[in-house]
Image (cartoon, rainbow, N blue to C red; front, top):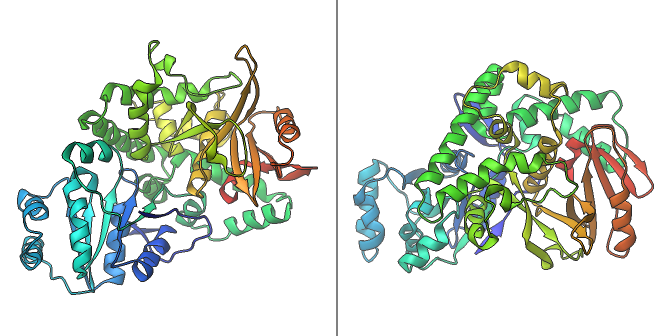
Length: 469
């Protein structure tokens, strides 16, 4: 399976449509690349969470780059269509004729796209792609997630095709959010400031306010559209609560993992992120005092593959090949979307008021806001294609001695990042890390609420510059 991730430098002219509002999405460029360089030999597997805009962007490609397209949604399609992917692959003329009749659309050889929506719900259709791609008449996009697919396919003894070009789709990143609110210029200013280590001065306060807006709204298209339409956080809150309710329903009805375990992990993410201990790795004992990693590894994988959460892994021996040395049983959990984390943190059933959101926007919340900032940094890094990794060193008695919030790789060097909230800006862990791994470490970054500045090899960056790392 070929794979690709969305890079922060990509640019796009197309977007995500809803209620007359078009959200420009960088990932559209990746879809065009697949069409020109990999189709028809490879199907595009567009992976992402529910409601992140996969179907909409796939259909936008169908409208703009093909003569016609058909979307087959396996959550709602009928048995006639499902049966085609099992019993009609030996007669593809019949296969395509039935699809055209069922959907009332004509397919044109080498000019039509077939979208297989929510493919994880019907793995037999994914298996059929090997035959459909060999036929070569049309192009194919699969949308969905990998959640539960492995167990489902193993149980049914299904063969997964290797002819897939996999692309991950994330919620809107900070630059896309700025585009959505009509700001086409700020992100280039942020990049220039970062590249030249030049303070932003009076601009910093305005950009920081916009980043706080992004944290509150999040990057789920429905929430962003509602914010653009109304500027009313209570309306945005309703959209986000609806998405979380959908996720909870998906958790409840899936049959691959223990749904109670899945729900417990999700519900405990805010409390685990808000803990004040130096090491805030996720403790399964807080979910269940008798919990063991082997029991929860499946549910954790399901949530990650559903792209509801990001799992950060502890790197035991940092090197430019960061993923070679990982302690899988010591991990952190972040929500893939920070706007949803706010709702999950205060989801008592009522709607969060505008005044509550205004308190976040103006730094008057008086709670451990650090967890929202840390989650937003994780979201920025993941959207830019980084793995979410961290480093913790312990004494012989199990006491944490040194913790680095995030590790990324730049120019063949390990770059440690610390996220600071409040007035405490000491970079002791960064300097200790540099001393211990001096030959492997490049620059060190502190992300905080102030303007950009440099102290020898430690660079202090405003939180929003996580989006350009």
